[in-house]
Image (tube, rainbow, N blue to C red):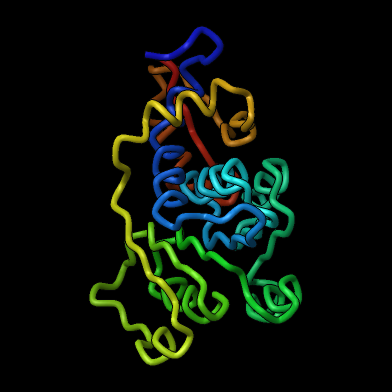
Length: 210
């Protein structure tokens, strides 16, 4: 059930928001910390919002699509990085004074970004893996993770977070509107699915309105 000040568009975003909130809870985010999100799809964007709502001091989002970076900026990301334009490692190092982020949330679901999460996080930091990598098993450097003493956490969907996600959205403390980039009536559901598949550069969240 949704409160009166939330419509079905917001309701459709409660599942990915719950995933992002669950990731932040698992990481035991400390207010004021720096959070890096790898991947700017709906899960990554909502993990960014969840981190900000939990008190993150600085947020960074990385994605190859400029439209997703624009959405992240509208949602409040302090820094956005496009790997196609230069070294992510150099950009993150510059943004964090050479230390790396306190928390890395991997939401892209690629073997490369899973490995990158260990490379980028600061010593003693935490990593939450949300994305399901296309390669399994996925090679990572155990030695690097051990040397840096990082905490690596995995999450699968969410756990009992829906009520809190709804309350957070209803409070007005997060802005979900920029995530919805396309809307289609039910009779154009096929076109909506094609948009998701074919327009990755422009589609973030596509809604089918019943």
